[in-house]
Length: 337
Image (cartoon, rainbow, N blue to C red):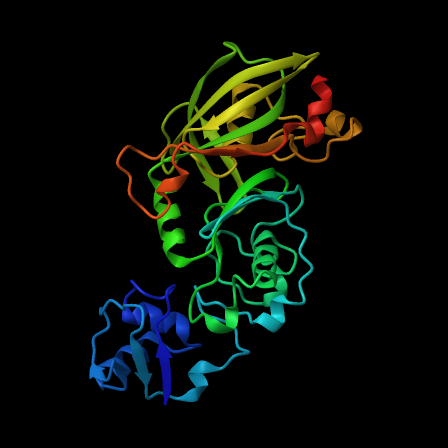
């Protein structure tokens, strides 16, 4: 028999989803059978899979201990590390902003945000995250006493969005489950504005405007292709820009993501005829490499929260606030001095 108490980060979710994350290798069919056969009780009573949990609820499980094994690979969504694991990490983290709900970090060029192919991909090995942004965030919060994986049933601090490995800039992570749910909704509803700085070849005309197109992903090649017309499977993209400064054949742009698709800025600007300095995936950069640029001159330098009037969520205090990195620290800014 095992007894689990629902913590603050576990409340508000269905019983079956909680148990899927709180156990290891338990097949769904067997999980539902256990619930049906009253091998799972909520506060001492018979329960149902769709029951919404509240903080303080006690779940009693009359199931095999094998489904609580600590060393096996975790199923999707399950936290798979302990305090001993992450205490061995050596984090180097640049924190731009932090409060009790979120942390905004300046990710350097060359660092993965997450070991999986996308945010939310399950972590199969703790060592996979030892040199990623999320791994560093875990270790940073653990060292401050703000995160104890041994005390959490199903939650770990999580990224709310991602950046390419070779793109520097701001990444937001949530410290608790409620903040994660709310931030994901804020991003989905486009209540947050994301601004990038980049250096491109050529000078767009007009000097400010909005690019429109359609982006199609090629999963096999890990690339995208932009079209000027609708094609099957492609998603509409919109990219706002303004020219800040020019120097020789280069222009410094501020780009605002109106839609946020994979490689959108890199592919859209190349399609428009203004490839990024150092771009290798969507442009030829042999000359750029000779100038010292081995990755795209692109940085997510500013975020602004534009929550609607009357917004009353947990993160309402962020409304109207913006955060940015020091643009003078960007390596490609020297081209415009």
